[in-house]
Every structure is written in C-alpha cells, then in structure tokens.
Amino acid sequence: MEDMRNNYIPESVKNIHLVAICGTAMAALAGMLKEAGFEITGSDQYVYPPMSTFLSGLGIKIDEGFSPENLSCRPDLVIVGNAVSKDNPEIAHMFEEELPYCSLPQALNKYFMSGKGALVVTGTHGKTTTAALLSWILATAGLNPGFMVGGILQNLGRNYNVGNGAYFVVEGDEYDTAFFDKGPKFLHYTPSRAIVTSIEFDHADIYRDFSHVKKSFSDFVTAMPPEALLVGYDGDAVVKDMLGRASCWTVLYGFEERSPWRLGNVRVEPPWSHFEVTKRGRPFGSFKTSLIGRHNLMNILAVIAVSDDLRIPVEIISQGLETFTGVKRRQEIRGKKAGVIVMDDFAHHPTEVRETISAVDSFYSGNRVIAVFEPRTNSSRRNVFQDRYAEAFDMADLVCIRKPPLLEKIPVDERFSSEKLVEALKKRGKKAYYFDDTEAIIDYLISNVRPGDVLLVMSNGGFDNIHERLLEGL
Image (cartoon, rainbow, N blue to C red; front, side):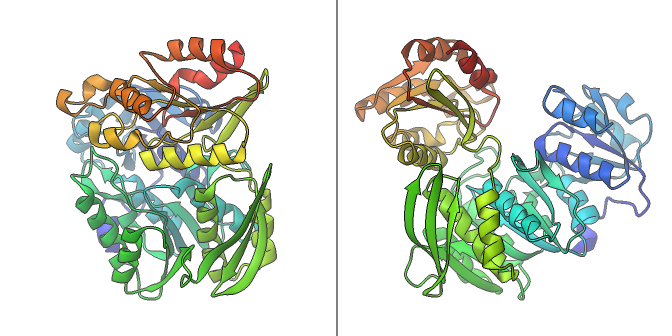
C-alpha cells in the first residue's frame, strides 16, 4: 500500500510546484511544505484574497493562469489539485517532460503523516468542526499535533500545523483525489483512530448513487488496522452498519442507552451550552461550549471519545472545549449592525441546512431567524435534493433563496430550481422569496429586517461578499 501511495514521489525533492494552489487544502499544504523547508511555487486560474494574500505573505510565488511556462523551472515534484483536469496545459507539459507528480493526500501522507498516529475525521457532515476541535484539544494538552482541516480555526487564524507531536489530525474527505486517482482522499490514510459522523448521499458529480457512497466508506472502514479505534454516531443507521463491518475496535456515541458515550442533560444559557457526558453508564464530566446546536454536541461527543482514548485528562478536555472559539464560516458571526446579527455558515446539504437553522433558532430563542441560501455546490445545483430542501427550512421565520450560480454547467434536465423550492416552501406555510441575484437579496433585506433579526447566510462560496455588503447597508 505504501509504495502505491508514493509511487510518483522521488526520494530527493527540493522544489515543488502546486497546480491549483489557491484551494483551501492546497494552500494549507503549500504553507506546510514551505515551513518544512521546501521551495514552493504554484499556479491557479483564480488568484484573489484571502488565499492570494495568505500565500504571498508566506513568500510563495503564484502564477495567475495555467501555462507550461509555469513549469519552466523543472520542479522536482508537481502536486496536482483535484480540481485540475488532464487537459490542463500544465498537466500536458508535466507529462511531456516526464516530471514526477502526486496528489494532495499522497504528499500529506508522505511528508507529514508518516510515522505519526493518524486521527482521521470522516463523514458527510461535521468533519471540519470535529477535526478542528480535536486538533485544538490536542494542542491544549501540549501534544503539538500536526493537522489539516477544511476551515480556519478561529483560535489560530489558520487551518494547518506541521507539529512535532505524535499525532496528525486530518479531515478525511470522501471527494475524489485527482484526475489520475478517482478514489476518495481518505483511502490514502491509515488511521490509528477515526471518527465517522454521518453517511448520506452527496457529491452527485462524483458518486452515482448512495450505494456508491457507502462503498467508499466501507472500503475505508474495512481497511483500518485491527488495533485501530473507530468511533461512530449511533443516530445514523448506515454508520452503525459500517462499524459492524470493521475488524478494528469500535465504539458508538450519541443518545442510545447501550452506546458507551452518551449525551446527558443539556442546558442552553447564551453564550454557553452546558452539557453532561456519561461513559459506559457512569458520569464522565460536565462541560460547556460556545458552539451551538445538537449536531455540534454530537461532534463534541465524538471528540471526547477519541481524546479519552488518547489518555487526555478530563480537565484538559474541558479546558479545550471552553476555549475553542470555532471555525470560520461555521455559524460565524460576521458582525452586528442596527441590532441585526449577520451570521455566515458553510451549510449546503439539506441535512446541514436543517440542523444549522434549528441550532440558530434554539440558541436565539425569541429572535426572528432569516435564512438566506445560495445553492452553489455541484450537488445543490442539481435536482437530486429538490424535494428534500423543502423540509430543511421549517425552523426559519423567513427564507430567501438565490438562483443557483453557474447553472449553465449543469445539464438542463438535472438542474435545481430555486423557484420550485420557493413554491414548495410557501405550500408549507413559510414566508419564502426567490431572487435572481445577490443584489436583489441585499436590497430586500435592508428594507425589511428589524432589530433582533438573525440573518443566517448559507453558502459554500463567497456569495458575492453579501455579509459585508449587508453590514455596510444596514
């Protein structure tokens, strides 16, 4: 397995070029490689802040656009982002010149995870927050973990750390690895401990159906070493089925009476959520967190289970939970103006939209929650979730749905319809409105919000900087 993972990587490497360097994970990898002493260059089609300024601040040269000239320095290794196709001019030149190349997980595994205990967080939902929190608790315990997650830790202002400790935390993505490796990224990692938060259909551009998704997770679970620990959510029947297939140690967390790790009493007193945890039927500890929502309490419970297996004292776990300030773009308050809170969240899958709105509604009890949604992902721009989205906004008081951007890239018969969603929401008794563009949403909200409102903006993209524009206009 090791030879297969690193068969594109020569032993002696000094200069590395990253194609599509401005992606969140690729930029993090570039920073780690730079910190490790490699000479780094990169290229991308879309070079703009914050990634462009982040990389330039590290002294990394970025070429805008893809061109064979970007490889004129003949790097010792080319790392290819998963958004890059084999028709890319740099890739064609790479093949012509027979330059060594690899994928992001191959490089991560080779240069930063080798010889360390890999702590892999997988699942359709909650990976980023769970991996970030686990990284923070390890750091709080003085273990100096390496980590790479899909969002910026508010505590640290970045999403990676090289670390010299015994553990490396990684967000195990089920998305494909590269054009030359269509398997999921998480199959490149050999966990000593792993978390599976949830398994649902997603990434309709990659997976044929739900069976295809389950096959990838099954491959991950069954490949885990017998001495490893697999932690899974008991509220997901597919996750429980996967744990039953594993040959390693397994443990469940959640609400079921027979699960070793269970959530006890919960008390919400903004800005804190207080909760109790039991381990095998006995009190384990009382904790508090600034994270909101039932789904985040489940993420926390998974982290507690792994932290305890790593022999981290309960007092340190409690300290880490209390001091963790969250991840950017995960229920992040971007500002408050004229009594109106503007919140940013990455939610895009129907389950994530539902859980996020529910969390915000319960935490801001008595406030009007206005959900603003941009269907932007490859799945949300398709009609695979057309009906499910109608049930995701039940806890919102007002709903604003934007027309999906880049809809022309989706076949006509597969396109998601924001207009149909709004019609379905109205039939459910919701106040819902459709908008052709972001400007129309901003104009409407500025004219109709009132003090006490929470504007929950959900998109996996920049949403035309709607957050700052709303704050400026209020």
